[in-house]
Amino acid sequence: MSRITGLWPLLAVLLACCTLFDGSTAIQCYECNSHTDSRCLDDVLPNSMKTQCHDQHTLCRKIDQMIEFKVNGLPEDRRIVRSCGWDESKYKGECYDRSGFGGIQRVCSCTGDNCNGNGHHSSSLVNVLLSSVALFILTREISAF
Image: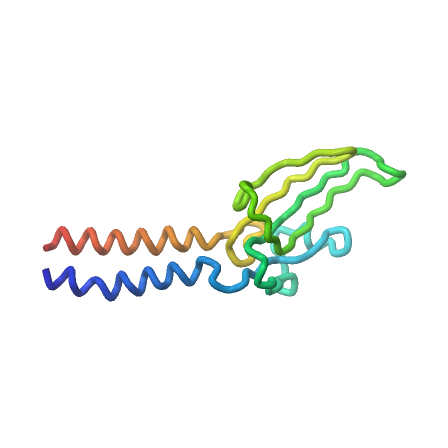
């Protein structure tokens, strides 16, 4: 029984680490618009595009816009806009498509720091990994008991 009691401090530290990644501070996101900076289209974004969002922001957003045909004399165009966001709708952490006159948008949101880059890793992945490690250690200690 003393071996299990000795695990509680380790589990407490792991749980504390998990709560640190749940947005207790303002989120950081990439912020750019490919219309004004073509690097926003790149697979690897520069650190200079990272920004500390304000406290009301709870997520990062990436909008991929495709203007499919000429509107008001403008040519077809594709733009990517990355920004901080605060939408608490049912799409939080997911993507959805919108369409209108002359174009379509794919709007994606995520809740981890700088997750609106390409190939992002969200804080929930960190939580899953830490929880898995804690469960593995606990299971191993209980079986040894």
